[in-house]
Image (cartoon, rainbow over all chains, first blue to last red; front, side, top):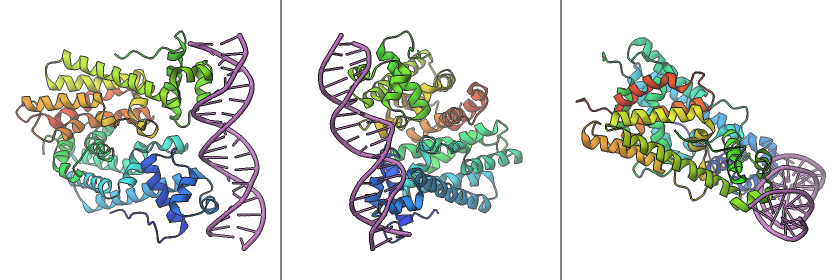
Length: 198
Length: 198
DNA sequence: GTCTATAATGAGATAGAC
DNA sequence: GTCTATCTCATTATAGAC
């Protein structure tokens, strides 16, 4: 699993990141001011600017760390599972777990409009974690586990439902935990792209 | 189809809305200042505030209009098509068309973080258009056209892939028009939820 | 209803002591 | 490295003539 960013005991850098993640996830980047982060983290303005340069630097650091940890977790799944179906299922399970266990992290990663405040960022869909997920599906297609079709369509079709469900959960539109829906979600996801042979 | 909001010939109200839609879609709500809207619309600050009260009022008006037109278009599809499969397929087709023909509108409707600037708004997933889409799927389940499962899961599974693909297209991560992917997308979407009997 | 000019606020960022 | 005090400036919003 992903480790959460530490909060109270850690150094100022991590305290700022933890506070920023929570504030960004709940109010959004633009509705969070640097003074808000200063208050919530207990770190002074000067220290914040010393470590991160500017407000955007906080968001960038957070984004990079989130993306990297996500990628590692997905890569670990890819290595542990040999076949495409169990890889994809485990990835959906991971996403559900993170969304339940660390909703702020998932919220920041998923629905934050990063382009609005991180000008040089690549679109979420092109980020390395998503590319990795797409790669798994593409490999499944070469192996005959996934039906022949456009690779992008296959990738969005197998993960799109789960991502949408996560978004609903984060928005408070779903009362029960995501795990309750895992079996149904996975059934739909795999039917969408599974090879007819299998 | 949805009518675009008028731009140059219309009254100040519509000019402001058209300019705001474009600016919000491209830069986001928070990166768009009222002076930006004033410049782009050619309507004065005073007039803008006279009509909309405040900046949020512009976004709210836009949001309501977008949601309502969307709902009407979806409802028209529901009335025109008797069976669940052709209803869902037409809805995906509609979404693709809007995303290609009026990307600003789709962008504002889909990826705008409305909660960040419209405090009282209901989550996108609970908006009436989405509820309508969900209702169509639920009806299909009662009729036996859609497999028995959680209704929410069925709804996100049939539309999730298409929505994800639209997001990629809006983010510039997809070079070809969405229509090129319609058949593959629909095939996946319907396999995900179709009753085994059919 | 529409406009220009302006007020008031709070933001991001810096200076400089410790 | 950390802090407080402060600067600068763009933003939202208003006032009041026409």
